[in-house]
Length: 295
Image (cartoon, rainbow, N blue to C red; front, top):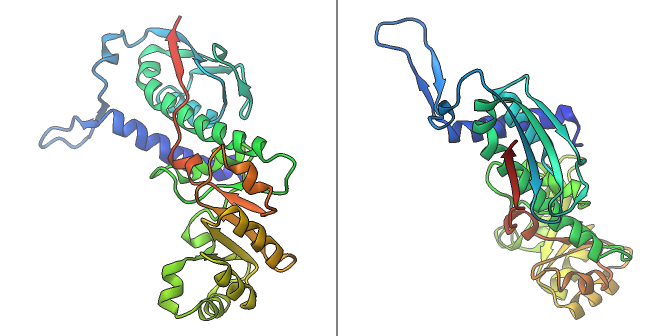
């Protein structure tokens, strides 16, 4: 899914927005003149001579899973297409505090302007990949798989779901157009679990998954009776999850959600659920501490 062809337009959009946010583009067109010239505003970088070249390195100050290299590279390449980035670590690698990650050579002004946007992407996506990798390692030996949610940072949906993938997790639906997730309000608006499931099967195109969220074992039974094949267990206790697994065996795939953290995920996986969705891997992350220094 995450081919260069798929990612390219999203990286372009993300990086363009980030750089524009950081250096408002000024029109230098004067009244009555036809040509329009534009100048990116980075007054601090202008302290450096225009033709001066620079050499910098990026290190990590903490252990992590490296993720976001394509976004990082694009920040520098967009401002200096001739810059050279030499990576010492691969996407998805475990990196150690103090480790050299990348050398950068190019126009000093461009490097200084791109620095913060590039690091923002790398530290944010590495944080998501790192948290995801830890969760996947904690459930090793069970059949449970770690999934993300749509609780992503605004504008970074594709980037963060890519980071989940790099961290060894799975993507739930990408967006509202990508799958059906029937929640409490959909059930209330439709009238019942059976009615909303019947409507979903009638209106949903082939190939689009249909999932329904339930809040009790009674609702789970109704969903199974309505031939639900993918059911989300919302804030079930461990005992309820075990009962749900016994109740639905061979009939539906079960996903646990709610109240999941590093301390609880193993016990949840051991109940026998198929999937565990965790919103915190994209919305409650702590950026990885990275540093770029000129040499």
